[in-house]
Image (cartoon, one colour):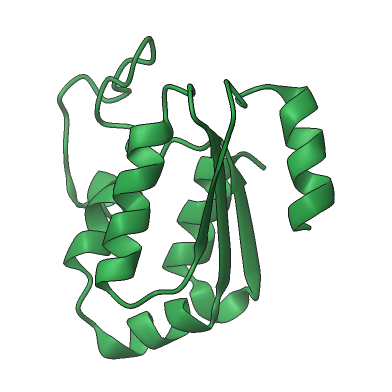
Length: 125
């Protein structure tokens, strides 16, 4: 399962998970990021909002949901030169603003590659 899917399902249902590891993920599919275009051609609705961690986490206020997120072990890892680095940093900032502890690991170079992911998995799993 890719980083986006892992984070999206774990953040929407944190009571069902203990840990989420996300490697080089993109958490806003609505925006163009580098060479990756937005996927919805400007369409935006409730379903897209609730499946876009970069959108729903900053606005999350339900204390029960936040407590569940705070119990979840969250590890984000991305390369310093990855196109999704800024998106990871923005999501990290939103999590800290909600007092959700997590780790954001920024690797040297571009880590959006299987060889980097194998090394990350061995460290973070």
